Image 1: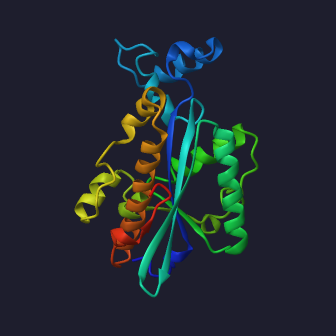
Image 2: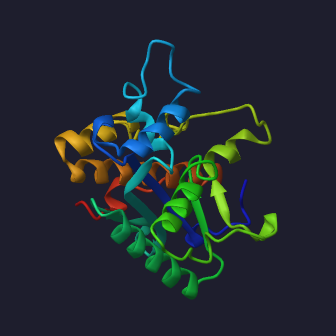
Image 3: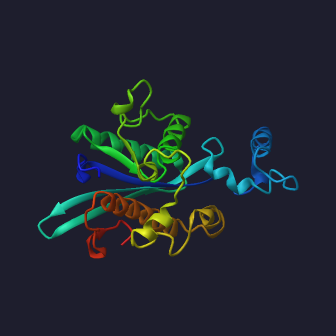
Length: 241
């Protein structure tokens, strides 16, 4: 499976997002009305817009990106390695600009690159693109898919690949790592805890570690799809080490 794709040409990534404000009371009045309307489609009858505001982070219009982690697999004489790097911080504009510069530089060197994430086509790739536009950042060529033919879009999605054409099928990264015997990235926190850790604990380093674990898990899963051996723990070059 996927034998035609060189794993060295893939940039694996994951993002962490949070609501733009620490709580609903701090949301500007005009914007509260938009969230009232948006949340009415999924909140329970007894819930208020404030009750479900923590979910705002999953919507690019109401959330912001606080971390983008990426990974590149390289082969050396000693074996297969992965290099991880993270762009993170409170200023979304800065981290997105730095990420865009990296993408442009990487694409200039290698126009055969792919971007790969779990549920990336539905979440990570469009979320990054929308937040870049909101922040006035020009889209890197690889993300600028408007007008491109399907085969010109170099996005890989480990969840979509697992579907094998079954549009009804959703499988979490956590479940797939379990059935493929890959170390879980959820051994400390999971996505539902990120907003609280960011706004209340203010522990960005913990979020970065979690994000990088997800990137590693996606890369390992892709290797499993290709029938290749996993990257050894000692061959993980993490920015948080």
